[in-house]
Length: 270
Ligand code: DGL
Image (cartoon, rainbow, N blue to C red; front, side, top):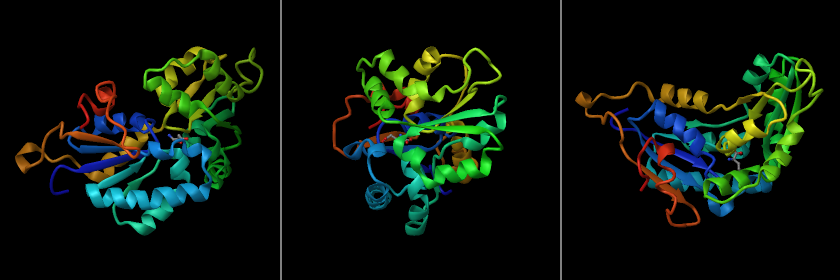
């Protein structure tokens, strides 16, 4: 890669920030453009046709305006549908975010795994194929949450979100005999990038302890591998903190910039 690489990270809203922060930690040398398609949020409430028709041309416009070296679709609801369309339409490399069913089933000791995603993600043929291919005999419970992405978005925007509302969305993930640690869910896949924003609450509200699987670190490793080793300053690259920008498709102003700095590795996004 000739100079500081530009990575475009895309989600329906603020959830993709949980993927961004891992990528920024792995690649502080890159320049970041984060795009939240908040004008169409939440994706989990749209039909498959509507998401493809929205995302494919929008990514084309973003590639034309920002010339990224790599695009990360930091949204399970979109990635489980649009990756092949994007790769057919554009030559830039893409990395998607799909439910981490394979590692979850590989590590579950009780053989009970739940997949917590949007209603859209858990209905997808893509997700069902992951279960067929990688469940390894585990009982996999699909939990389509209608409201958690909106609750996470609201909490990050500084609004009060009640424990009761969060707990109600989590409850169906906990399957089996709560009193028998060998016969109950022990692993939950965070299959929506918004959910790690609420992870502290999930841990506190869980009826029993489980492992929560967030694929963001694996996605960051994949991005770093595709980019190749960072250029040192002596080769004309910037060692770190190459800047960042954040865009909302609604055009809403950046009132959150300072609160979002940790996700950008300390940068204030323009
Ligand atoms: N962050 C998105 C995901 O990973 C979904 C939120 C939405 O419904 O827009 O699935």
